[in-house]
Image (cartoon, rainbow, N blue to C red; front, side, top):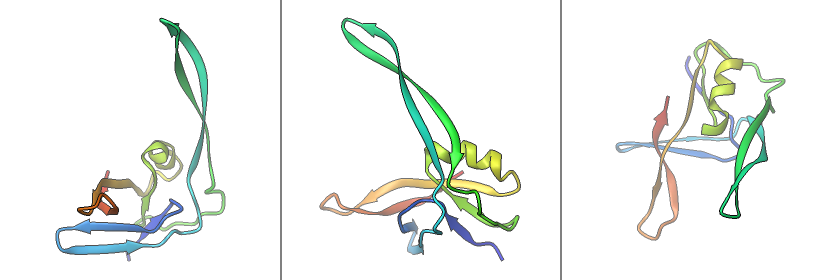
Length: 110
């Protein structure tokens, strides 16, 4: 049976039309360390380059081939490399209420 595995530290409230699916954190958080390196200066302003480190946080994660992995956009590419037999997604567009408070996401992005 296909299930969502949330690789973020937050509950995901996924909205799709009138349906809301709440996916609790799995306890595994996909993390990519990003290092900023000075690239150059333009009119006294530093322009930074980013260098990604290795994928961390999923060392003991066990998944079935039909599980859908939900991770941050920043980690999605590396998670997909680590789990090539799974659909790897990230939360869709952030939805907010009339006061600007987050409600969840609009579906998932492949």
